Length: 359
Image (cartoon, rainbow, N blue to C red; front, side, top):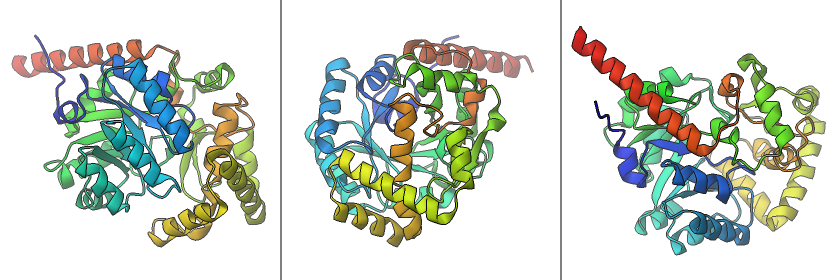
């Protein structure tokens, strides 16, 4: 029996399979994105942690490595958001993903140029708001997902969002996915595809140093991948390690000092002025999503993550991770990952069809 995996998502993004590689800071580089796209899925470049000149370099590098469509991720409140939008338009990038979405003018400009807008959300009400602002699809991350995450499990959250907005835009399920069974489950809940971060981080093409990748492989206990507010006052799921334990024990003054130092390092790295960083923090806090203190502390995440993902010091940085890392035992290529998901999904769908027809 021939089973098609074409969904509204594949039509919208122009990819072969309804599988999305999320944009992990320091991880989703041109090589990983191109490998994902060449294997039939859709990949997003990480654009929230690099200056515009490097973003353009990465867009051009990705275009040289693949002739398939791909996307760019950024934060609407980052100081150079407008520059990223113009690069996306200039180079004909297919889609953007983002969080904290009240950048209505930027969304309108992207849509005027045919760019697919695909925010990540965590509650049905956020999906409704995102669509009102112009979203063409929504990625819905359940509590099992890595990095900033909510508390509602994927199995409960996806059907809720599908009921709320699934008749208007494609819904992409994220949080806890790694294989074909998960893809079939998401489709059964009404989603149009799945998005994965941790599974692609734990791939051969991911530019993460070997010692950091091994730390993920060695984490065989999903319960050791905890949710903490120590980084920026917002819940983030990470592998428990020495640095995270120290941040958990730190008092408010110590956390603020760490955030200020991280902010200065991020300013030097990104080329943004101190004024633009402070303005971004104020804009974030005015949106009502975060407090000013949380916005200032948000500089912690990219620079402390860098120590693990770039410098290869997994105990000196933090390790954002979905719980699914505790069930992944080997580092496959992107082609192997996607081929395996598609093959297993087909087998699952065939078995289901046989059971239904037999009954």
